[in-house]
Length: 162
Image (cartoon, rainbow, N blue to C red):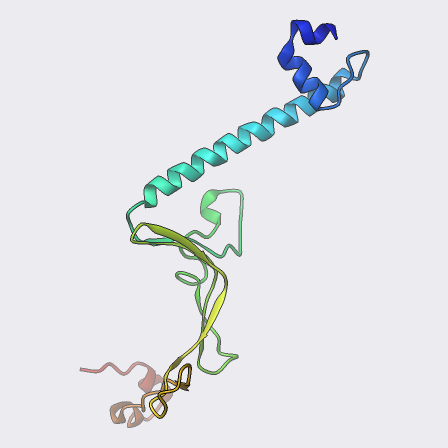
């Protein structure tokens, strides 16, 4: 118990890590202490980053982070507010009348929130019923005659309304 009288902090660290007071493997114990200090330093850095990020977004509105589907060694290799699609909004051509919104972290008038992955069906309240939760698909508008009159798909795709 001599180490407790002389060095209280060393005693707390050594006893909490299971290091014996007698003869022990110094290299192994030093590595364990380095790992503890490294973990604590990482926690402090992440806490600082979190506080700075919150301060930057207080009172504003916008996209802070979207689904990360790639990464790399540089911070610009990872998605932030956009990646493959802006705001993680994506197509669902495999489902009729469905649009996707990937998970993300957003700020709206200073209130920060996160969402899970959401896929929405394009529906509206029923025009035929006043019952609660009765929905109809949003009607797709007809193709304008000026576009249908074009002779090829390329001409239809490049049509600009005046």
